[in-house]
View 1 (cartoon, one colour):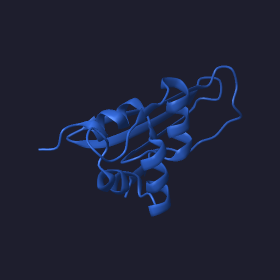
View 2 (cartoon, one colour):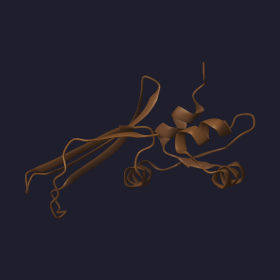
View 3 (cartoon, helix red, strand yellow):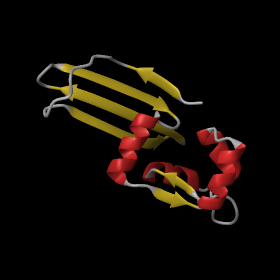
Length: 118
């Protein structure tokens, strides 16, 4: 289950001066994400962060910027199915599809999923 914290919520109409950044990291063996928005014209800023997989809007922006890593699922050299289900909360049907087609992960998620477990 993802843990999420909202640090500020202020909205303006998006303009050419708006700055929006999203990123993921692995800290203390945990997948984390952060999102930051700032508009110098409207003098507003918002920060959001959490543990686990980011919300879809953050994840899609990261994928658009950094690209996807196609991971094999199950079997030797693949992401363990139990880990994939635990991290993403996939249904059985989604796991079956991922087993057949692989899984599309962000580069940070790929490092996290493929890291050797102690």
